[in-house]
Image 1 (cartoon, rainbow, N blue to C red):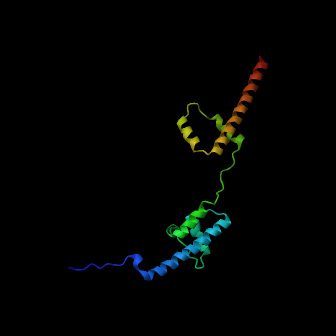
Image 2 (tube, rainbow, N blue to C red):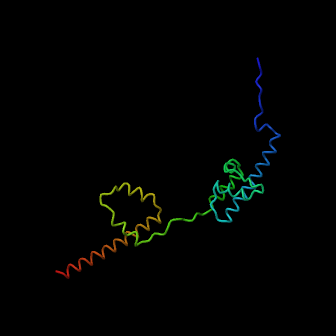
Image 3 (cartoon, helix red, strand yellow):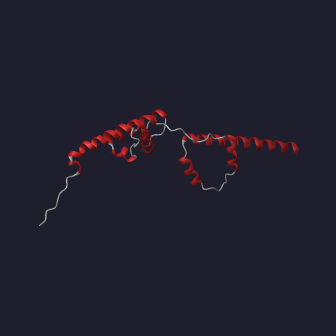
Amino acid sequence: MPRKSVSPRPNEREWLQSLYEKRRSRSLEIGVKAIDMLLKEGNRISYKSVSEKSKEVDPKGIGIHPNTIHTNPELHDYYVKYKKNVTRSSKKAPMVVDADLVGFMRIKPDRDLERVRQRYMKATKAELVDILIRMEHYIAQQNQHWLKDQFEQFEND
């Protein structure tokens, strides 16, 4: 009966351990430098941005792959630590109250209220407050318009 050859497991190859350690330490060093540069510049920290910035940091210009950040435990811990501390600026344009009031005239009484509820549930507290303020402003304008019409009708009678 022929014997099966048993190849050593990857972690049993001692002669590769020094190579793996060099690569891990190189990835950690380059990744940490890239994350620090992104923090200094105030840029967003993501796997892709760190990978791209690592090509600038690496003297060889090779950089590190985004998966390396995930598979290298020390680098991943460093990445997670600073990923959460970066604040992202809101890119929403400020709402103009007068321009948005026209939209309130288009509201139909027979609209799907469940859909409206879902839309408002997705909004942030600040967005809901802005909508409420705009609605109150619209109601105040409509009340003024109604009072003016009533006064003019009274004068004409």
